[in-house]
Amino acid sequence: MAKSSNQKKDTLKKTGSSKQKSSDFQPEESKIGATSSEQETGLQKLFTDSIKDIYWAENHLVKSLPKMINAASSTELQNALSDHLEVTEEHVLRLEEIFESLGKKAQAKKCDAMEGLTKEGEGVIEGTDSGTAARDQGIIMAAQKVEHYEIATYGGLAQLAKTLGYNDVSDLLELTLAEEKEADQLLTTIAENSSTSNNNGSSDKEM
Ligand SMILES: [Fe+2]
Image 1 (cartoon, rainbow, N blue to C red):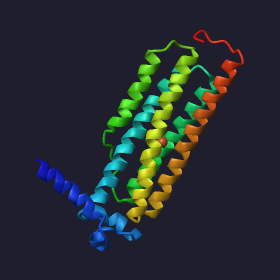
Image 2 (cartoon, protein in one colour):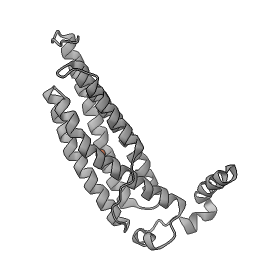
Image 3 (cartoon, rainbow, N blue to C red):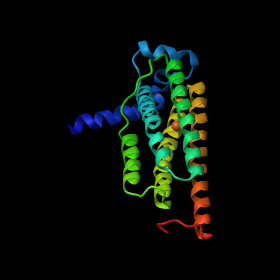
């Protein structure tokens, strides 16, 4: 058991070694479409598996965001989440474009992290009263956890794409990464605005 897991680790390490670099890394663009019919390297497999994972995650978010929008009470938060739903739909399409560039069929692989994060968001909604600052703040926190997960994922994927020489794919991933960061920043601003309005005496039944 231990031996086989060590062997796997060794394979991953070797994939990045200079010895294998010339044969395993395929920096030229023309190689992208050819990988499906050839043996994938460890890094290529990690990359496609991770793309399938985030494809599931983004599709799941498209289904989950409407619940958060309906549960939020501030118009500012509702609008931010609604805008992000549209952006998320674009992220799904962008991933489909990436599958196409890789010469692969778009395929989703269940992302346990995103399932957990959205479940946590639903828990926050169940645990707070409608129309309260606590509900909105809880939704902001849950949404930011999702954004941070996506930022980590797209940051890693963009770098991995670059390592593999998939430069056009990396650019698409960077574009999504920037939009996730923007959404995260907007949520921070909304939380700050709401804290200012509460400090200025705006009433809330929980405060
Ligand atoms: Fe996204």
